[in-house]
Length: 404
Image 1 (spheres, rainbow, N blue to C red):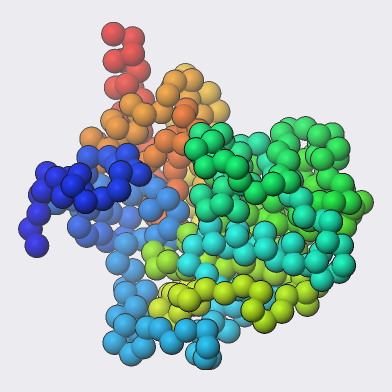
Image 2 (cartoon, rainbow, N blue to C red; image 1 turned 60 degrees about the horizontal axis):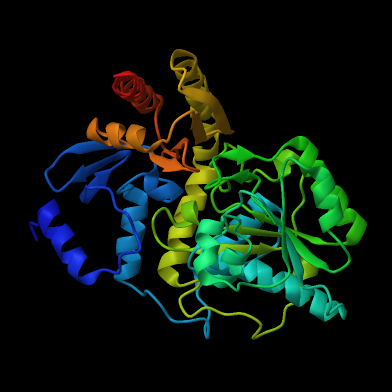
């Protein structure tokens, strides 16, 4: 099917629900850190499907596993056993220290599961009044009703109110507000160790200590939303332990399937003991294709040097983007860890994202004034250098336009 961008746009205008503001490009193939559009033009991909294509595009091991599985058996449902759920779960347990996993189809679904499991835990304990949640200003956990209820931005929330009751938001720069918000009626606190959509903002050590203190004081469960920051993105298996946090539940998604939809709620043993058969479920969750893709990714991460690779190239990435910030005053701050970086600008990021795309570099805008960089975990130093050189030209060009 040889469709042009214009053909695709016209079809979508007639038949696709208009919930997305797409950029004017259509991609038809990829290889490693590169994508190719309908006109054959090459782009260096530094957003990787918003942190999803963790092994890059058309990774040969993942592609072979997907093809083999598709030709063998895709789905049987959770009425029966198959080999890959347990294998993926055991690897996730090694990485996280949480011994059990519930598989679903996305990070948002993983958050939903964590919220349900937190409530179920207290119900089982006989503390039926412990139904409330504390979430963070700037946090983003998804768009379904539960995950949206613990997402802070009113832009996402307002059209769908009323949402889940009993959610209190606190400023992650205000430990005293957290102490006041967490009570003996709080089921769980949910926090991203590094806020993703909120602008690549790591939690401070001071606030992380306040999270631990609040949970210890009240027995409140801690949910670490590591959908974006987890699974090697920062050069660490998960970022919560780097901050000294010991979560009872962790939500994961994005990178886990390397592009195949799969998510998981990781659960401590004490919470797992409160969950009964029938408490939660998913028709597609944990299917053979998704969990086999997860096994491929986790094998690359844990056994084939990918985590060490991210640590190495992450240091190089930080060095290069900090040098870039010194050169361009429009960049007022560089945040993030490993291959999860945000460039805080003094202006709206849209023209910089658009200019980068015209020059063959894909980045995206978040929190209005942040240029977000989430390259594949397999990215090489030479491609980081190429991306920063392109950004150098982008910032110079857009700054010249603003001055004019």
